[in-house]
Image (spheres, rainbow, N blue to C red):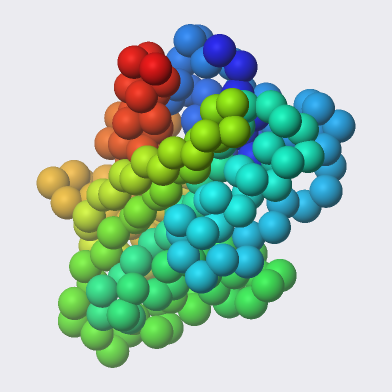
Length: 191
């Protein structure tokens, strides 16, 4: 099966293709000539995932999916949440987002957090949502060089390495994105 993944992030495409394996062939919107930025102006992960998938469906009329992922830190009321990629501002990079998170979390003893991912799938115009989450804690300083985003700070419960310290296959076996993708993949196999 061919699916367009509504992202321009090559890290995400590689990670998702590794999780899905060979049964699903992933394409980017650019592979079909769509090079505009895909909007994500929703107030929730669900709204953003649906908005991105609908944008690609409406432009290309091809089966597609999109995700939105957020780090939800309980001491910060669920922040950065839907703003995870833009936490330190609209043009912030990973390091600026990490620095802001650590500053805001510094006075709090509770460092419990979760990564949550919502996948929006559009098949023949029908929409479906799948969610995955993994709980853990935010470390006081980054550890590891793999992954992206907040991976260097996130230590999943029951593990001794951050996402950024894990091999890709280790992370892909337990991550929030992997859990949402597994649900989507099971759905596609039974459809």
